[in-house]
Amino acid sequence: MNLTLRIWRQSGPDAPGAMTEYHVSGISPDMSFLEMLDTLNEELILRGDQPVAFDHDCREGICGACGMVINGQAHGPERTTTCQLHMRHFADGDTIDVEPWRAGAFPVVRDLVVDRSAFDRIIGSGGYITAPTGSAPEAHATPVPKDAADLAFEHAECIGCGACVAACPNGSAMLFTAAKVVHLNVLPQGAPERAGRARAMVEAMDAEGFGGCTNTGECATACPKGIPLTGISVLNREYLRGLR
Amino acid sequence: MALLTRAVRRPSTLATLWRSTVGKKAVMAVSGLVMLLYLVFHMLGNLKVFFGPGDLNGYAHWLRTLGEPLLHYGWFLWLARVVLLAAVVAHAVAAYQLSRRDAAARPQKYVHRRQRTSYATRTMRWGGVILGLFIVWHILDLTTLTVNPRGEEGHPYQNIVASFSTWYGGGIYCLAMLALGLHVRHGFWSAAQTLGANNPRRDRALKLTANATALLLTAGFLSVPVAVMTGVVR
Ligand code: HEM
Ligand code: SF4
Ligand code: FES
Image (tube, rainbow over all chains, first blue to last red):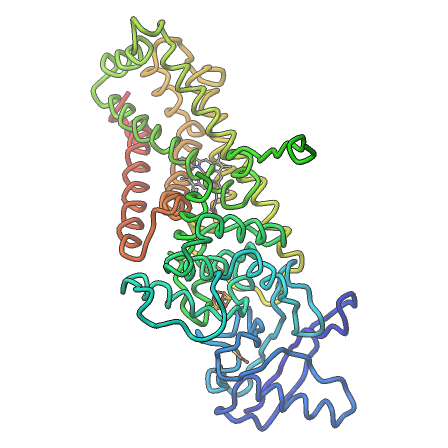
């Protein structure tokens, strides 16, 4: 496949950036999107140019490190992570626009790499449980109802990639925060901090400058892990409940 | 001692609500639902126009005597107006502040833009502004009678017919009611989501209820100007 890429290049956090055009050829439809970028970067390095910086780690869709907006869609046209997006979803001769996540709370570090430590601070404000560390607990010590286990598991799938923020027209982090709050609040292990968790995490989220939720549903559509939009309703309920 | 003298003042629940994005949205949801409840009764009341001037004008008079002798003549109406004014102000101020914040959360826009979200969802802000302007026009037209072509106090039936008989009176009203339908379509479901009443099992039913409410409300309101413009009501 021969492709035209228009990629956001920015040499540093305060440097101006611009979309820059590149041509790549000999791309196999079986390559992942990141492998396609690797191919481009090899050429750039051979030419003596700076390679395009992008985040990645596991390359198997579980770490949440990778992430870029491809043709205006977070993680591109398929509902998966960028590392699991394959070039067969594009056609020979396509022009593809690649941009970093855009949010004030996710400043660009370089090219397609953004600083997502705002998510870490939200987690630090309440996305944990208090438990003794050491040996693994007895599996039957804390019974978990099946419904609660299913709901918690569904929301625990969040990998913190930030696609929800990137896709939201308001740059809101509600789906991410909801995933964490629902995951922990429905489990008995999360019960001790339940009363204050949603409030603390929403306050941390607001302090980072993320936008508010207008229930557009763009986040859940973009989420590679299928975190449901109704999770946000549970977060709202837990928040209002905590104020009483 | 030092500890005791340091007064720990926690902000009130309302202040906490107003300061957070989730809480402010809850204020919007509650004020929106208050207005929606009012609109349902308002629409049903308007349908009295089809039973003639006696019925409608009698109903308008009854609204003023409602609650007597506990309330004085007209007090019920003023109570409703105060509640609605509070709701519309809270709703609009929260909408404005949240919208400002939302815009600031994405200082740099995407180069590659894409049409996102449904029409009803996309038009909440401008649709809301249209509704706000319509509310002003509507009060000037049929409450204060400032811009009404007939403007006869105590004769709402005749004033309604006079207003809707002009192209602009009927036109503005019809456009606003379409905007209202769209606003309620997204708004009702959104309010349920905001107040934490939604879940995967209820989602479909809530969306259906939102669509049905929006449709019935718009159809009911629209039937009056359409009836006047087609000569069914005159
Ligand atoms: C002053 C005029 C109005 C303005 C400026 C306005 C604006 C807005 C905005 C910006 C939203 C949030 C949109 C979103 O979530 O995407 C909203 C939501 C809503 N509006 Fe309005 N609106 C107005 C009048 C009304 C009226 C007359 C009703 C009564 C039917 C209403 C009912 C609602 C409801 C129920 C919501 C949902 C709240 C939520 O999402 O929790 N609004 N409005
Ligand atoms: S909710 Fe989905 S899109 Fe958002 S951070 Fe988690 S996995 Fe990524
Ligand atoms: S690199 Fe780990 S999810 Fe894509």
